[in-house]
Length: 241
Image 1 (cartoon, rainbow, N blue to C red):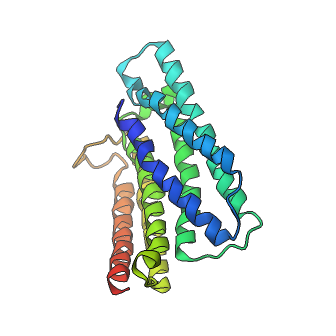
Image 2 (cartoon, one colour; image 1 turned 90 degrees about the horizontal axis):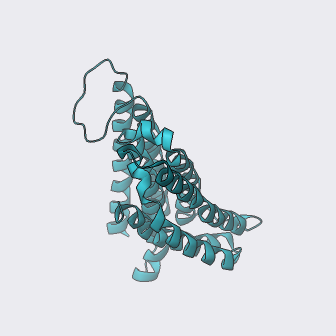
C-alpha cells in the first residue's frame, strides 16, 4: 500500500489537469483561484504519501498509528475540496456551454464529491474496521478511478480529438455515450456500496443465497450493460468521425 495508495493520486492528478483545461473553455472564463489550485495540487501530492495505512486498520496497528492515518486521510480532503471550489468558482457566472466534454467534467465534479465523502467515511478507523476488505471499499475505489479518471479521460478525448485529427466528433453520439455511461456507472457503483455494508467480501465469485445480496448484485450487473452501450457509442463515434 506504500505504492498502491499514492499511485491512485498519481493517476488522478492528470485527470484534474484535464478538468482544469476543459472547464474554463466551456465556461468562457479564466480558471478561478489559479494559485490556490496549484498549491492544492502540490498538497495532494505531498499528503498522499502519508495516507496509505488507512487500508491496514484491520491488522491491529497501535492507537497512535491509527490516529495518525485517520488524521492524514481526513486532511487530504481539504486540498481536494479547494480544487472543487476552484472549478465551481470558474463555472459560477460563466456562459456555460453544455457540450460533451463539459458534461463529462460536470459529472466528474459531482462524483468526486461523493468519492471524497466515502473516503472520509473510510478514514474513520472503527468504520473502516467493519468494512475493510468488503465491496464497500471496491465501490469507493471505483468511484475515484472510474467516475473521476475515466470520465475526465473521455472529456479530454472529445476535447482534443478535433485538435489532433482536424475532425469533430458527433455530438449526438457523444451525448448517448455520456448518458448511457453515467446511468450505468451509478447503477453499478452506487448500489455496490450496499452489499458491502451488508458484509459481502471482496474477491468472491459465488455466495450463499439468503444473505440479502442478490438484488444488489443484479442491479450492479445491469449497470455494466449500460456502461458497455456507452463505450460502444464512443468506439463507433471515434472510428466514424
